Image (cartoon, rainbow, N blue to C red):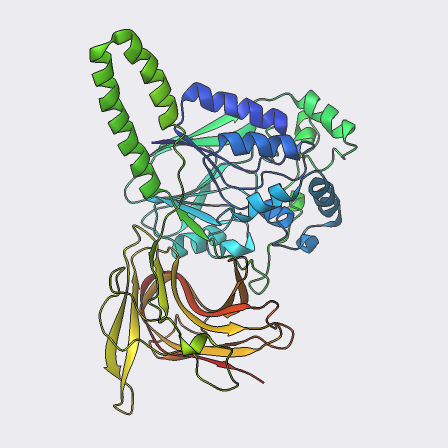
Amino acid sequence: MRYAIISDLHANKQALKAVLTDIKSIGADQIVCLGDVVGYGPNPAEVLELAYNSVSYFVLGNHDAVVAQIMSPDCFNDKARRLIDWTCSQLDSKAEKFFREFPLMLTGENFRCAHGEFENPRRFGYVLDNDAALKSFDITLEQLLFIGHSHVPGIFVMGESGRPHWMHTQDFATEQVKRYIVNVGSVGQPRDNDCRASYCIFDTDEQGVIFRRIPFDIDVYRAELKKQQLPESSSYFLKTADKLPEENIRDIIDFSPLSPEAALKLENTTQDLREEVEKLRSSRKTLLAVLVALLLIASALGALLFIKSRGHAMNIPLKPTSRVIKAKRKSQTPALRHPKVGVELISMPQKTGEPTEKAPLMNWTITLSPDAGQTVSVEKGRDSKKSELMFFRVKSAKPASLRIAYLAANVKKGMRFSGSAQIRKIHLDSGFIELRLMEKVKDGSLKTIVRREPRNIAGPARWIKTSVTNKSKEPIMDDGKLIWCLYCEFTGEILVRKPRLTRKE
């Protein structure tokens, strides 16, 4: 599989068209975009349409998140905010909805993609030095990590020493003892004192990465800026083209990464490409066998069908999948009535074992990511007082989305609830765990009301109680159904016991 990995298009139509032409000439199988489709440039609508029709997979960038209204523009400086406001005025609600569907990360066979840092991709932190690179290496398992965001192409390499170091762009094949963070650079806003568009080709079979630099029509880009009455100063590559003095990348950046507290709260964090790639390969093999048979019947007709079938193979719609073990329900579940204050709304399963689609848990829904080596089982143990109690054992071989949810009650606008659970790590190699209260509203969508990560979970193994309460400033906003949810994306094994949920005054 040959991926063309592009990033930071930034509404530069001339650059994107030049890059797409180059990709076609090379013959990549799929195009992956690492975010920031819009921003800075004069053609957001046209670039979004080009990307929509050409790109196979997207990652959410910080500019995309602002347009989608899931991040405040306050983390940009005044000049960038003015351009963001103009960009939003050029796009409709369909663009906003489209951006909201982007995951924060993509995972494949031994590689992972994000817009910026991997330590907490919700912050959109930059990976500009060895220390930042080490944090991203420490939180991931894959050998190859692909990023954009800084607009500066290059490679952080880490070998047996365990310390990363920066290398300028060069084509390479992976070595077994080394790991790599590849910044693919920017298509629409290069900032490395080279005014050509930058992107990468990644060949999964050869495990090789090739950097590409593509010239585009800068004069037409300037004319488009002038037509839209946008400043040239935000497009740093124009200074390079005019041979003005170079600036340090830290002085050019106009976005401040979000604090951990302000980091994005998203459900759709990671999309796994491996199962989809296998489907594509399987489809191609099947199509090839059919085409060979057709060619033996009639060469002329077979040739025609070959062209059509192969074209169809490249456009198979690929969607992320997950394994969902839906809850078993009673026709009249008492807990789903409007709850009284102080009444316990959750009950642990009393039957041990691993739930399946044929044998689900009463009121509990388990959602697992495919190919991530994830299991959830119910087991019986004893507490410090030797009392018998039930707990969940949760395992994940790779950091991918996993949810344990309990549909607890019908709720009305203004209600407040308190939830909790005790969590104990067996081993936790990377990722995060969150306890959430969520609401399913009338249109079927899910809204997160409040969330919290367990404190000191990475410390010594012990039971840690984590509690969440939707305070007066976070009330239920709509009538709907309340869900207690443990949302995880980690590598390791944990135990979960004593889930609690009660209505507050």
